[in-house]
Image 1 (cartoon, rainbow, N blue to C red):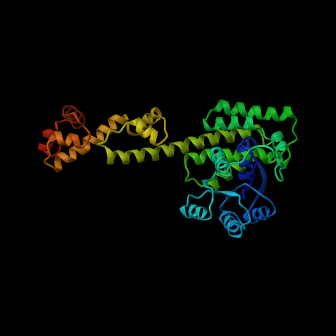
Image 2: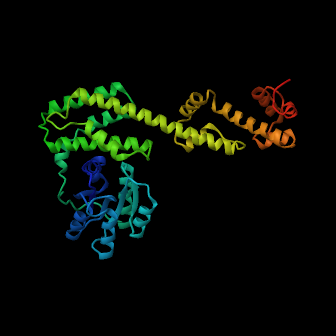
Length: 366
């Protein structure tokens, strides 16, 4: 089994990574969790680890300083995965310089963790099984008892899809489950559930927009998701927050969509002559083509194809006034291989033939 250390000064990040995947099923055990680089360094001096997953920006000692000390002093042969909320190439350069295995932006996804584990396995070529260490700072049995994962995953799904019925049903089921199990929710139990939800909801926001202020969003979620107390807040409070956060994600998607449309608009103005389709852009920006088509119609009052024709005809109109090129060649230059089709489109958009548009110099009939 791979022995793993998690290092981060944010408790919700540590807890989130702890429960984000089933570490044991991937041949790992979380041996230790540390809150800063100096603490992690002491653990590394005292024992053997296969994988260290550490944040960069931490008090006392940063993740890069931790990695630098480990490499320069030869303290451990553990593989390092560096996490950062800052997409800064200098950090990546430092991580590479000190032989980090990988560099991931926070909040890390389940896939990111799994990929890192597979990379370590590939490098170590270890044989799984035969070793079951104790967990120094994380009691898996305790987490299994207090983490209402199925109910919380259902709630998160409802928030992600802005599904009011699923949100309400999930919250009802969560509170029913708590009452049914008769769980006395200690502060530890509340924090396990709270940190798991904070981690997952922050990840939903960052997936939509990497440039958002993660600290602000994290504090907003943390302050509202589960209040300290014996009942994880009230049912009404949790439902209200869940609906508000679902609407926040909707507005975030809208902002991101507008940014995508601006990027597509810019690209069409540069590559209008190429054979570009809506499906091409949908694949490039990871958006459903039908949804992208709806966004186009809502934003521009026309279909993608109509918008592309409009761009091409406007470019052709400019060429007609600025050059003496033949109409057939101009048609080719803006992406039309059929001159008759080009002329028909030109008339439909400009109200006259290309020849008359050029002759009048304005495209307006006398």
